[in-house]
Amino acid sequence: MNRQRIIAIFAALILTAGVAARADDIPLPDLSDAQPQVREKILASHARVEAGRGRSEAWGRYGMVLHAHSCLTEAAHAYAAARRLSPKEYRWPYFEAIVSQKVDPRRALELFDAARAIDPDYVPALIHRGRLLETLGDRVAAEQSYARAVELDPDSCPALLHQGKLALQNGDLSVAVTALEAAARLAPEDRAVLATLARVYQRAGRRADARAVAERARSAEAQTPFSDPLYAEVRWEAVNIRAFQQRATALRDKGDFAAARRELVRAERFAPDDPSVQAALAEIHWREGNLLAAVTAGRRALASDMRFDDLHQVLAIVHFELDHFDEADHHAVIALRETPDDPDLHVIRGEALTRRGEIDAAIGHLEVAVTLKPDADAGRLRLGQLLARQGRLDEAVT
Image (cartoon, rainbow, N blue to C red; front, side, top):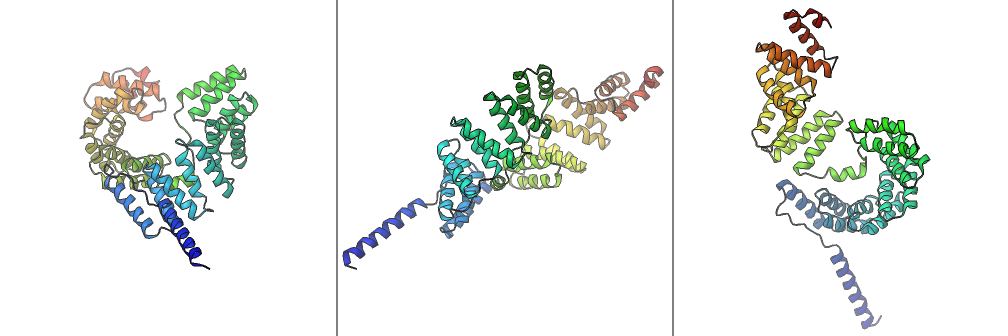
């Protein structure tokens, strides 16, 4: 091999290395306004990439940490580096696609398809892809993506909802009814499902059914969460205070109060004076039966200027269970301004007023409580006692 050939090859290698180095420059977002624990976590993850630039897991994990803290441009860069290093790893194109959806939907579609080439049957990805295809105007492909998701997981409420909504837009009422009725069976309190099903019934001429379901939708509160176990790994990387609170809320809603408390204690460690954290802790302590801790956390929350209407409701119940009737009444009065139809608060007011000798006012609150909740045994018993004391025996018996 002649000298010029060697020089040319060497130059090409240098150029290639330079391009690779530039491609794998480690991005670092502006952390000047970041919470201290967020800054620490991002810098630690950045350092792990520096120590192992050729490791896809280090790059991918860095992308997840950045993604969890909304550093989306830098996260996309890190995911792309991880994808180049491990082209068969599903997570990296999938997470990069999620990051790219809003800023570059066509690029996101390419990445979802790259992920599908590795694993075509991950249901959350099929739902994401269907929504993206709708955004890009390809309803046929979107319909196919939703149909495949439902085929793989017939109990996926989000897949059924999106399939039904798209079928409604396309005028395919038979598919829409089938999908949305299945979704409503899975999630009978999901407002979006019920509202969409009511529209389908209306379009199909089933007006009585439409009215009945629309009425259910108006009082529905729950919304079925979009379950994505892979993307949940990204969310768990977040260490900002809001993330701790969101995870605690999700765990509370599942009934896992101990895990919810652990998340809030972690938040408290980083933000000991945050009143919203204390308010959330007060509720969890109450649900776990730790009433004195609930009172302490509640007082710390209310020491701020922030409003916590739900907290007054919790503290009314907590103080009532502790036989602190004046404190319970104080919080019940405030809570009733926001939730005047809460029977438990009326029972608390009735008991407190009874103990102060304000019998007529107590009877008024207890009558409201029994009207709102006929099986409220404590309220009914106390109401009967007060009516009997006033000689109103016929009313006391009923």
